[in-house]
Length: 117
Image (cartoon, rainbow, N blue to C red):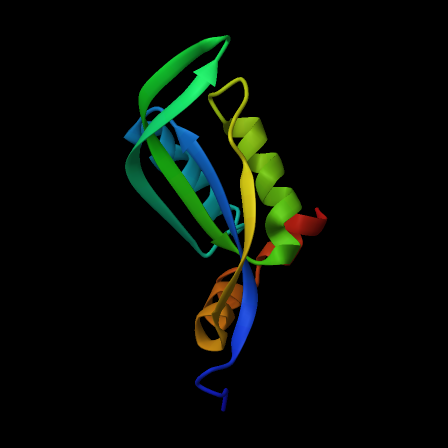
């Protein structure tokens, strides 16, 4: 039995796209490849400088919860299927409860085939 306060590392990989449809397509591709256990999608407003001008755009954030071993393959998939010329790809380590991290890990159990193919 795992201690209630035990934690394990997972990785959070975040990108943004312009539409819900693009977010849904990326989320489904990631989950089909078993490169994340869960993908969350939420609308946001982004403020940034692009090609010398300040921009304000509605975007959709795509947050993938994954294990460290899957990050290189996940980033490759996101780059290959992303609609943006320069996609935001941010990787953050996170501490999750041991139970939740175990679930994330179990959802990706078949990813070893994809990762080494």
